[in-house]
Length: 538
Image (cartoon, rainbow, N blue to C red; front, side):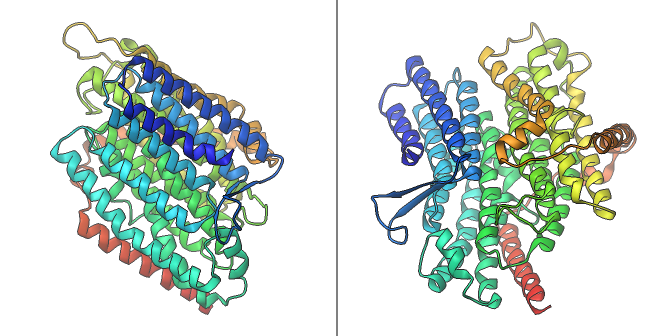
């Protein structure tokens, strides 16, 4: 069955492209996507009983294509099919061509393939397929800005993928196989010094996919591209960047002899702080959300690396559980926010956060869905973000705990500004437009999921990760008190500093060009190589 999850989206893509794209074809697409989601849930339930393996063509894993579904990969496949289902429903009544639908399903097939393959070369090929699909979708609505953003994304990916290929070739030379799990076993035969170079090269590519500082320059261009379809921006932020996070976990398993948690902890903190500072400076709602993707990825990496224990060996620390659950939560609330931003722009004709008012009164469904997603991302009590952040800080102490509170405060400040759209009186000439009912339903589902996965957060974690966690209510209430104190402080900081800050206005237009991105790729590679080398020497 594993091959069907990769082949089925490709077949759907071809059928939608070959046949005239009318309403009936879109209905078939929705039904097919719902079937894929149901199949992904069935696969996930199967992996709770154990791993599922498939050798395509019945070749040995060293010679053939080897697929593997464990609890982690099946969870990401389920997340992929669900997010694409919401995107398909959202885009149902949009006047998109066959090319759009073709590329969407090709993108989905490549993403699922990355989660299921156990072959390093297949990861390279599928990543490139997904990149090409994303580039064309970014440039789907033709404009000079979209063309520029898409080409920058394409060229920077072309540079960074060379690091992955170099690292892959080096590891293949050492182990004689492309199979990740056989690689992991054979790596044990080599000294630490042999692994530093390929690890640094591969992790540079992965860090670029995750948009860690200083490799974030492509993300505001891709996610915040002015005319990119809202569904594309939602998938880019809610799902596509999760491919990098998934690969980070897998390659940490592969290079389990390499100790780099302190390096990525520092990088995660820097990324989280930088992301929310840039988000606070923006007035375009898509750019606010784009930079908060950078910030949230930094928070996730901080959670992953508070403890040096990873999935490898079957052990989960609470901070790792929190980071992994926040990865799922981020797909829900950020996907919902990008989709609602698309509706808001269509209704108001502007993306300026200060010019949009009265959303709750004028468009109550869109306003409620947006508010639920905002409550999720800021970590409001009983919403999903509060549960994942609670477990992330469980293993943190002292100054690290303070840093995490500061990062959460930055998120709150930005979304105090963002939530201003919900209140006041809408300045719309004539009668307000009616929002598309299917789009309202799509974003409302995402908003409600933010609440459900918060109320039933502990149960959801135990179901998804098959690991038992305990929420200490005294500790949780302490975090609730910190949240409300941060909310008050965030409002005051926004009102008396952010709104009139000249410094934030100056950094608002900051963006990285192609040369800067190439330089940052080399800088990151050198940094991780030096740090891993220092750790080795110590």
